[in-house]
Image (cartoon, rainbow, N blue to C red):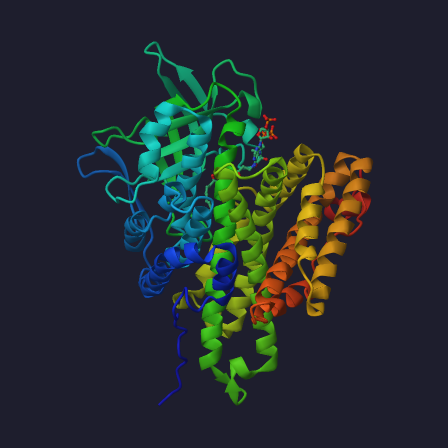
Amino acid sequence: MSFTQTPPTLGDVYDEDAALRSLLSRLLPAGVLAEVEPSLREMGRLSAELYPAQLADLPNEPRLVQWDAWGNRVDRIELTPLWQRAERLAAEHGVVATAYEREHGAFSRIHQFALAYLFTPSTDIYSCPLAMTDGAARALLDSGNAELIGRAVPHLTSRDPAAFWTSGQWMTETTGGSDVGDTETAARRGDDGRWRLHGRKWFTSAATSQMALTLARPEGNPGGGRGLALFYLETRDEAGRMNGIRIDRLKEKLGTRKLPTAELTLDGAVAIPVRGLEGGVRGIAPMLNVTRTWNAVSASALMRRGIALAGAYARERRAFGAALAELPLHVDTLAGVQAESEGALHLTFRVVELLGRAEVGELDDEGRALLRILTPLAKLTTGRQSVAVASEVLEAFGGAGYVEDTGLPMLLRDTQVLTIWEGTTNVLSLDVLRALHDAGGLDPVVREAARCAAGVRDPSLGPPVRAALRAVEHAAEWLRGATRAGQPALQAGARRFSLTLGRALEAALLAAHAQWALDRGDPRPTAAARRLAAQGVDLVVSTSEDDSRLLVDGRAAP
Ligand code: MFK
């Protein structure tokens, strides 16, 4: 008999997630936790049940059918079996709806994103259309457009699969996904008073949605972001015909292969302005902030899934006379990624907590400024962590991690997108600077770190608290210097600055939570806080623009 390895299996996805359960026990009042826990346990059970279905679905990919047998242009996308199931399950389990039903006030966001966190890793990035659906509901509600709110929001937040709609977020054009102000799509008003859109959308995720929010420039408007307007459109009419939209092709992507990302031509798509005829970027910003939060939740969730699989494997796989889980270096490696994932979880759910409080009007100006700053910080920090953790998870399986039909490579490919879409690490670092500028400086972040530190008493938590405070102070010092030096210096260091703030806040939040857990007899989060800080939180270094230019193109700075 030749030896075969035991594949990793998932246990109870909710009950075995010690970090999530500890966090929720602190964030939610006992009565609320008791009420929401059955739905989380059920989602954990469902997530474990879907995992084998996800593996069985590995060879399937969505397919674009442009023509029917009789020569009619139909542009139909056939989804993979798991995606079809995910749509129904997401509606029934309220993965978007929970946030808007608001049964538990501000805590409903925590409940909803905990559901999303459990649902995401087994559903092949179905979190993408859900993120955009949630974001569209938020943007429409914020717009105050009563007609569109009445028409779309009940669908976007429905638990009935027959009534549930998802939304697209069509921003990216061939001119680029970051500098959206260069959008070329034109909006023309016809003699019938209706607006029609003409242009090409180059990267539209989940093109199967029933509606979309998109940007276009009304004829005669100036260039740049301010000349764009935010439009609402429905993709098909009541007879199922496309609304002046052609699906040109699906993208061949590194990952998220089950997600039907498409290139579209808008050829007279009838659309409705959501909030006036300019300021479209401002109008879509609430959607971006919600989808960026989903991105951080997805990053945390995919890290957790990879680590759960690597842990299960390490308990079974024997090498050098012992289970991997007994080998000191393997244990040390897994502990390192576990600490990264717990830091990510705490920063992410701090954003979620603040978002929930903002939505019920509980936040003051400083709280709103903190939410605005932490949203891109969490997205960019957790996105980078998820790629590093997924890479380490694959390595923890040795060669098996590199083999497609284990399903493990998909983890690495899928996390890579989290640093790209919804704003790259660099674009979001610049967004952090914009948010700090709007907030009048770094005070909300400094006070957040100080608030975390103030609650920590146990000496074992001294190292992470000191590391976090020193890093925030170092970042503040850099910001003062770079502001004096001018825009090129500010921009060049923005990424290291933002990652430092993100990691420092992760350590501070984790340390504050660890004190709470220690008070209840649980030393685990303390180990995570200490390890995260030991792995380094301060990335601020001085660089020279001359050196950078010489390294990149061999020439000195102009
Ligand atoms: C797993 C879950 C993940 C979800 C999956 C979703 C997949 C969807 C696929 C995609 O659609 S990916 C494409 C996503 N694209 C982006 O995220 C765009 C990235 N680029 C940026 O974020 C740029 O910074 C930006 C487009 C916003 C720059 O455009 P502008 O026109 O140069 O913006 P400007 O002038 O700085 O800001 C315009 C206004 O918006 C300002 O307000 P005022 O008009 O009142 O001055 C800004 O303060 C405001 N603003 C910009 N970003 C904001 C914001 N307000 C609040 N929050 C923000 N994030």
